[in-house]
Image (cartoon, rainbow, N blue to C red; front, side, top):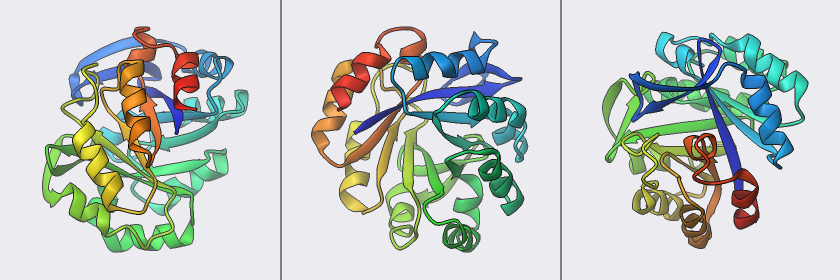
Length: 238
């Protein structure tokens, strides 16, 4: 299992949302590139970047910041937020992003997502965000009737790199992830599962690792508020 530190961008700043609510945000840094370099210095190999403005508007917004992070670090960068057409995918991959996260349009237009996955093999990640057992979209502002596990099963034949699962009620709360549903997802589908949302302590990392089939863990607020150190998390995960 590997550790992926997270940078969420809003107005080109590093922020975290509480339970995915845009009016409940904590600003951590006005220099996302400096933050990315700090993560790299502490041993990170990957970086998870979410364009929150893009997720809300339905198109990438903070692309200049993403491009600068890619240019100035050696991190493998995965990017999500408002990526809802092929042009945006191509733009980010050409920019040097290692992989692109698709959420909303994958849920709403699965045939399109299938086409894109086959066109860009192992370059797309399915972002499955959920409230309870139901999938959420549009920057977490809309809840769908689709069941999380059932939808994940549909992706098993696709050449995607991973599924990132986030329980929105846990995200930014620093109370631990949804272990039960994360394990259920990993036990059910054969696509690599990345755990996200609420991971707060080394004990959380240890428990996820013990499941044996979690590919990675995305961690944000815990690193910013130092309830856990990146170096320690990486060592534990390895």
